[in-house]
Length: 329
Length: 299
Image (cartoon, rainbow over all chains, first blue to last red; front, top):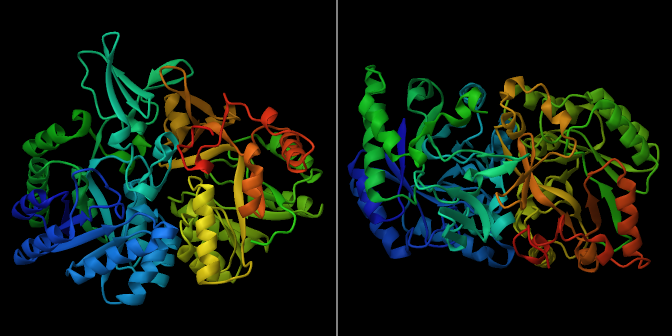
């Protein structure tokens, strides 16, 4: 089972590789990937360095080209594919059928993973992508219970990749327009959710307010830790009750499911967080490396210090099994 | 892409209405001026007031009135039972299918059936359209966040690169709360502290969903079970001139029992009998996506 770690820059990439990642995934410094944030991602020359570092360590590098191409600029997405291949990356992660087709037409041999942004959650959808684009792996959206993952694993011949840890997207990825509804920019078309340029932090009547494109997402008292205004994690008013109407600030942590996942056709565990710091990437990678090795050796028990590390690094200092557990749903 | 008279379609009911209300609703729809009627459950497999047999009976009733019936499929398929139900639906009749997931495209293709591409399929460019056209797509519902300009760019590039003539229709969502997101979680059940597995079909109590407001009272979203909808209704009644330039079909989404009233407004504005502004309510309506800005805002 592969441990696949995020890297938003060369520092994170080195730390991930040195801390035990089997593979890293990255994106170009533009809107061809779903983490298009200022100061993040790789220029062509940085990617050359990245490929070199990863391959010297005998590990693998995946490149996410997983937004949906705009019609007038489709060549830009094709060029991203060409560049990634030319620079010698090992895997492309793609969602748009236009790009899947382009990859298969021009690079039939390249390893191709279906991005989570393609929202493939069932045997029919996976079969569709397999039949038409010969995908080598599918990244499952964070909407399935562990039982449903098991069922897919039993039914599908395509190997599965699942999210193991990180910020929790609670909507089916690729099918969420909440961000563009409030700001005009969404992960699908612009590669960003709740983009930083629309965020405002403001003191008002002794409270800290967070706004997105001038719309109030949350208010915090002095003793509360104010989180980034990701719009699905705000506190809203439903019938006069103010609460986290969609989800609380929390991170996904599937550590306790590791033995189950390992027994399935799950070939890779993905750690979310290309936008996080190198130190974060290093610490998360360490914990998961140890956990996977322990599980493999048959000496399995969730260690307290793993739990403590993962809780400390999580959003809002709390973690959840998310959709893997029916009770969350 | 042809420019014969524009057709009016009625989208599937996105909310959960009880059996009686649903059947009565479609009785009036059968008598209405809609050209195309989409039927079926697209949001949640627990919404079973009507069985497949019921939907097929309604389809027959409506199609006997000369309307085109389209069976809409579930958008987010998680459980094995949901995929099985989808397969049963697609194999049950020869009505046109609206595919809201690639699984439905796959099953239609296996049977050699044409299909309508639902807005959740994420066809964002001409190349993607070309592929689904070659698999049997007869009509395209663009992703809801696409603007008039980008839809137009998709179509013009399609004509330039693939087919100069009209090959599939384009349908534009002109009225109603927009489905914006789908989750494993049922927000409505959670808002009343019920687990999803024991939701007691709570959505029946909210035939127009539950409004989610900011702490300042601004309508942001509508909870509709596992679906999150726009807080305001998309309303392109002031934009019908530009809508007509790209759309062959315009879709109204059922918001209230008397949908015929909404249809009359659109028809009367389109024919020039009435002015559009009176039918646009800035407190409840928006048209931002069409103009390439945030969907909640208006131009």
